[in-house]
Image (tube, rainbow, N blue to C red; front, side, top):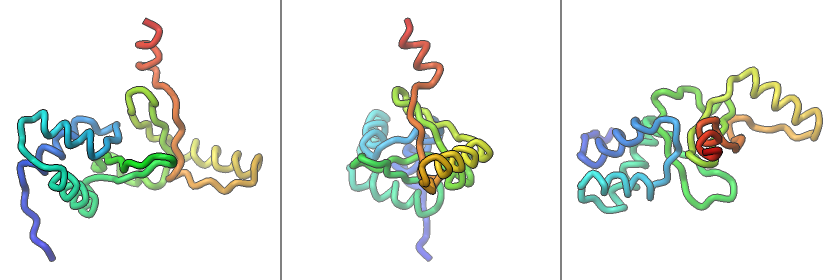
Length: 138
């Protein structure tokens, strides 16, 4: 088994993702955040650390339909994230974890109405959260 050691880049990546647990961030966004911390690191180091953190279960990695980029999200507070649906604010990116009864009824309704056996763990409902709607009205 490979030994694991902490690096400054890994610590900053984790700190940034822990500060934004309800958001999915691209590697580019994470790279820019690390650079804003005055840490000199190259993109390869970011990708290597993100891969390692996904392997250890510290991060989730998602690729949404019609998107080229992978998204990363801090996972420690979201166990069993693969077993329920998500909603995401299209403005701020906040992730909402939809409870299992809702997801089950949604999947059942889609199956009954359209004959589609949906996978809730790969389903994301997009919309605007209440905070972003309030900001838009101002």
